[in-house]
Image (cartoon, rainbow, N blue to C red; front, side):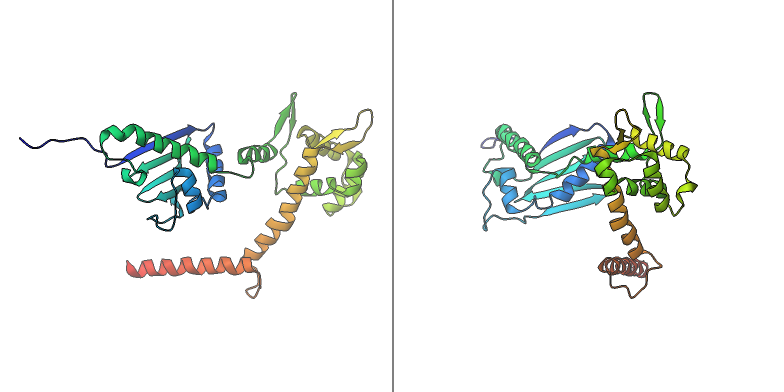
Length: 297
């Protein structure tokens, strides 16, 4: 018809960067740590770095970080005006970062199709900037590997070393004995460690024979926690052994054991512990919600 013409325009554009990870469990552990340590990424100062746009009091929109869990998969959401960026663990195989532009004018760009290359640049740049800004305090995948190596048997040069399971009382007693100052300073023999180990298990030294102690020493050595002093019958802790033993024993005695005592159903109701009060408040809130749902149904 005379006087009319048409042009293709862009109502919404999505630009995604997908980084495939080596193992599903690695990806999940990594992304959960990313969320935990970057909850401030939706603040104005961070958003302007991600999108390369100045943010001030007159900038429309809500600047916040949202964590949304669907099933067991969390996702991280950051908003800028009417556009947003989303990050999630895709199909248990990859970290996916998506920028969705719902209004091209958020970035001073027109809607005509010829502006797609510029929008593409904006979207992929935002994805990469978000990844550059995000930080984690430690290599969580490495930590998981180290922990799981200790929880499983290990094979070294055809020799099998049984696992050092975290909650095993024998393992806790063994590692508590290792971190005695006298052993750290000058090393120890089979007999030295046997005496301390027996006391920590509530036994007399004579109730643990040298053969059993040799078994434990071999287990520690093959896991890399101790090493034999050359040309002697003495052993000494390795750096890995000292750090692992301290971490195992301190977490168990100072966090896990007292924490479980506080949240146990057998704990006294009048306990002043804030942890117990918090759990009870959460439990009451869940019970109230369940009652309301049943009434509504």
